[in-house]
View 1: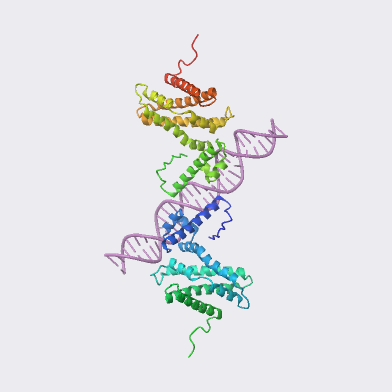
View 2 (view 1 turned 30 degrees about the vertical axis):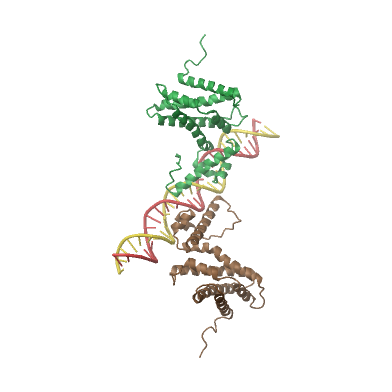
Length: 224
Length: 224
DNA sequence: TGCACTCAGTGCGTCGTTGCACTGAGTGCA
DNA sequence: TGCACTCAGTGCAACGACGCACTGAGTGCA
């Protein structure tokens, strides 16, 4: 069932709509609260329903699955990532045939991706669970895909004449690349913030951006 | 539909019951608030529903009529009257064949009936509406009857072996007599509190009690 | 006195919530 | 490896709230 996100400034037309919206909001807010308190997404439907003050059946009347709720609860966090990138896009004018990509790349260089992506990975799969169980990995994957989709929507708004396929692929690649880069950066530096670890981040990010800019055609090892 | 009064100390067994109780309570509380604010019972169902945050249909799902709600809202006030009488009953031991009546009479002499009955009449029918419209008069009548019923219930608890018919008649007579006495007292004194007006009250109350104690057989004018 | 209006109260159908019993996946343990 | 348990998710029916159109009583006015 299609659930449009309700704008806070458009009150529901009647009491039924209001109740429905209120319950949906309460469920998402409860999920956020439980994630914040526990530091992970491993709460049960019963705990969520109790916290939201609805029945567990009602939870599934509003959402298809627990993962859907968690993703919705991630919404604010994911929006913050995209909002940060968008703010930096405005600061850097992009020109020339690669303007869209170069502008995006410049904005990403200026945006803190480490903190939110690290936070996301912690919530979805706590330390010591490498590799994450398939269900947790799938949730993380969906969250990253969601950021890509939101980034694409934002880029389409800024470049209305752009090819939607290209924008979708580009944004998906950039965000997935960002996530992989964070992962490598953590392996190399242990996730510790320092002048050296920031240098490593810039290097890895530049490589990721360059590979995405120029393509992977010559990405393999040199032929003998 | 029978609606048992829910004790605050017995939470509803499930969410449906809880919701039902919550809405019923909200309706009664809203009626109390509106009566207090307006100084009368002349609010509309729409105003009540809005204040209680339910639909006007829901109001009639819980109560048969607006008057039923008003009476329910009077509950605290009416209970206070009976509680006051009961407290004074405990202070005066009643002995002898007329012990029950004499004890009740003594307690009533020590209880302030003027304030609550005056308050009740003001809420039900504001000044300048004498005689009150039939509908308002009916509401007042039901409220007075309700006090009588509560008083009878309390007296039965204190005198388990008493004849229920006698107790019902006695309590109804005493309370109705009290209301009539307040009315006469107001006509004579204008409702003003003073040493003289209190003397008049005691005189009228004594006459009412004596008539009820001894019956109305010789109540008419003396034969020539 | 008839008309227009307000408001209490109602019947009926829809909607969202809820209770309950159930299935199946995943997990831990003997 | 089989069993018992937990938990996500589901189908179904009942319940309470709600929306809506309606009726009738009461009221004020020309």
